[in-house]
Length: 220
Image (cartoon, rainbow, N blue to C red):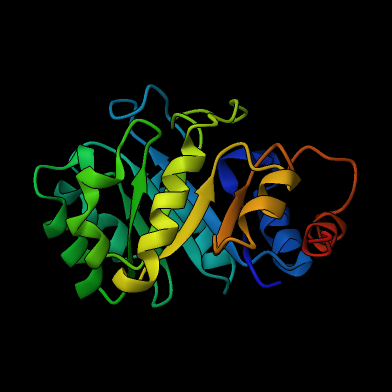
C-alpha cells in the first residue's frame, strides 16, 4: 500500500541538523515537514524562516511547510521565494481574514496549496476552500507542541473529508500523535500521508532507515 511519510523536523536534533536531514533522506523519507510558529497563533515558537531555508538547501526532497502564524499573507513572500516547485505550503484558515487570497499567492508561486484544520475546526467552515487546495492537513492534536495525545473525535472529521476528496480533488494528510495503529486504520481508507514525530520516528534507538522500512512494511 502506498502512502507518504513526512518527518516533523521540529522534533529533530538541532545540534546535528545536517546529519538529521541527510540520514532521513537516505532512509527514505518522502518529505520534510517544517512547522513555523509565531508564538501568537499558537502558544509556542518552533522553526524559523532560516531553518526552512537551511533544510531546503540541504536536500532535494520536497518541503511540507506548515504556517502556524497570524495573517500569513502579510509575510507569505518571505517563505515562497525560498521554496521550489513540488513544495507544499499549508495555512490555517482561521489565521487569515481572506485565506483564499493567501492560497492564490501560493498557487501563483507554483507551489502546492494546502490548509491545516485544527481539531476544533469543522469541515463545514472550510468547505469552499476545499475546491482551491490540493492538500488538507488534519490536526489530530491541538497545534503548537509535540508529544500531545490524540483526540479521538478527529476520526469523524476525516471520514467526512474522505467522502469529499474525490469530487473536490484534494488529498488528506495526518498530523499529530501518529502511531502505527493510526496508519493501519486510515491509510487503507484513503489518507495519503502521515507526519511522523516522536511517536514513531524521532528519539528511537534504531536508524531512520530501519524505522521507515518497518512502517512501510506494516501488515494491512
